[in-house]
Length: 260
Length: 260
DNA sequence: ACGAACGTTTACCACACCTGAACATTTAAG
DNA sequence: CTTAAATGTTCAGGTGTGGTAAACGTTCGT
Image (cartoon, rainbow over all chains, first blue to last red; front, side, top):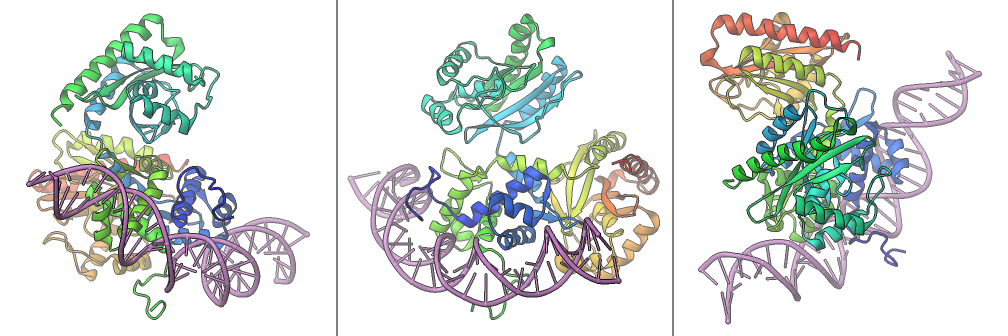
C-alpha cells in the first residue's frame, strides 16, 4: 500500500516534519491540549506525539503549562516578526491604514497574498468600527473578500486559475461567489474600476471596499480595504467616498515605495 | 556511537524535527537563503535541506520568492497570534504601556518569561523614545534587563538557579552582571524595593526601570519597564518619578486581572 | 558560448522513527 | 482511604524512511 496511489496530489515529503506541523496545528486550534487528545486527533500513537512535543518544547516552540497542558510557545512571535520584516511596504501601509480607519470611522486593513491565500498584516479600528474575527496574521481565501478580489484581479490568469483549482470556491455566506465564471467576470470589473467590493460574501451584513497596491512593473504587492456594516454604507459612500479615500492611500504607498 | 555518550545534555529527540527547526532558524537569521547556503551552515546535504524546505513550503511555513530564495512564511504570523492569545493580561498591559510611553516620553514595554527567557510582548514609543533593537517577540536573557531582574526576583529560588545554570550569565556590556552571587544580591534588593534597574547592562548608555506584575498568589505574570538614555535620567527621575509611574500601572493591571 | 554555481531528482541502505505495550503518576469516584 | 480509569512517560524492536552521495537540469555571470 506504500505507493499504489499517492493520496496527496503533491509529492511525498518528510513525514516527521508533517506530523510535527499537524501537532502544532492542533495546538493552534485548541489553544491548549494534552498528549492523548492530540494523539487521537491526528491518528498517531501517544508515544510519537510525546516525542514530538518534547522536541518542540526543548526548542521553545511549545510550552508546557502548570497543568501539564501543551501550548504554542512564544518563540513563534519572534519568528513571526522576522517573517513580517520581509514585507517592505508594511510600514507605509500601516500609516495609511491608520488614516483610513480614522477618516472613515470604520475598520481598515492591509493584506498580502501568499500561496494563494490572503494574509492580513495590519488592522486599524475607527471610532465606530465593527468587531470582526479578523486579526493580524489571519489567513483567508481570496475569492470572498474585497482585498482578495483586488489581488486576484491583478495576478496572471494562470495563477488565478491555479489558485481557484487548488483552494476551491468555498461558500462562506449565501452571497459568496462560488462559480468560477462569475468570479472571473467580477475580476474583469475590478480591473476596469481599480476597486473591488465585498457584498456580504464573508459575513452577513458586512460589506467591504478594496484596492490593490502595485509596484512599478504592475505586480500586486498587497491591498487596502475598508470594512463596515451595510447599514452605514449608502450608495455614494460605497461607490465614491470610500473608493476615493482608498485610492489616495494606495497612491501614497505606491509613490513612496518606488524608492525601496 | 549511537548511545555511548549523549552529547546534548537533554534526551535525544526526533532528528528530522530538529533539522527542520535549525533550517527555520537559519532562515530567520539570514532573512532569506538558498538550499546550498543552509546546507553548509547546518551541516547536512543539499537534498535533505531541499526536502525539508519542500515540506515546509507545502504547509505554508516557508515561501519561495521570485528569485528562488527561501524565506519564512507568513503563516508564522497566524501561529504567533494564537500563541499570544494565551496571555490574558496582554490587553491590560497594552493600554498601560501606552500610557507609560506617553507620560514618560520614553520607550515602554511589557515582557513575560518563558523557558527562562524574557519575551517582549508589547512596545510603545514616547515622543523622545530612543531606537533600540527591541521588537514584539524579541527574546533576551533575564539577567541583564530591568524586566528580567524584576521577574527573576519573584520566581522560586530553585527556578532562578536552574535558569542561571542553563542559560549562563553572558556578558553583553561591561556593566552586565556576570557573577551569580552579585546577581542574587541584586534580586534581593529588587524584592525589597519592588523595582528593578538596568544600568547600561544591555546597551551602553541605556538605562531601564522595571517592576513585576503578580497574580493573587504572588506568582509573576510579567513585568513592565521604561527605557531611556542615561543622559535624560537624573537621580530623582530614575529613583522616584519613573518607579512611581510604573507601580501605578502595575497596580491597575493587578487589580483588573483578578477578575480574569 | 562557456563554465560554475545553483536547485532538483534519483537510488540505495543504515538507522531513526513509529508502534505497541508496559510503567508511573495523577484524577475521580465510591 | 481504596480502587479504577485516565493521563503522561518510558522502552524495545522492526520496518519504513530520511539522509547521503552523486547525477541531472537550469540559471546565472562573464
